Image 1: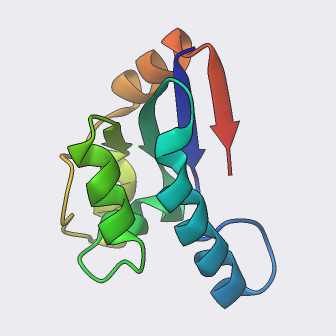
Image 2: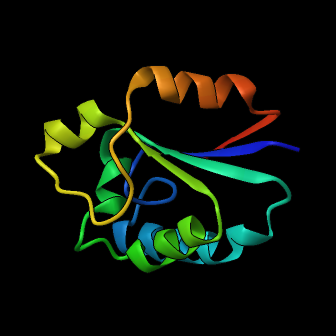
Length: 108
């Protein structure tokens, strides 16, 4: 089943930021086991997860090396003034295509 994960913030859940980052790292380490995971779409502050100082950059890089597409919003990257450590910036058309062909979308 073609699955896309959406990361629209730089932590998992709301509330304690440190906890949110810790459980996001755990999720990403275990995400390789998700059946049919094809892409991770990142927008809003979620694009910060691809910055060189990201606490989950190692996990995202490993997922990319295993063939999962990382699709960061270019407008969001520009807004935050980021240089990405991994992945090329994308656009809303590409994000929409990823979501349109997904059989399952998981938003964190």
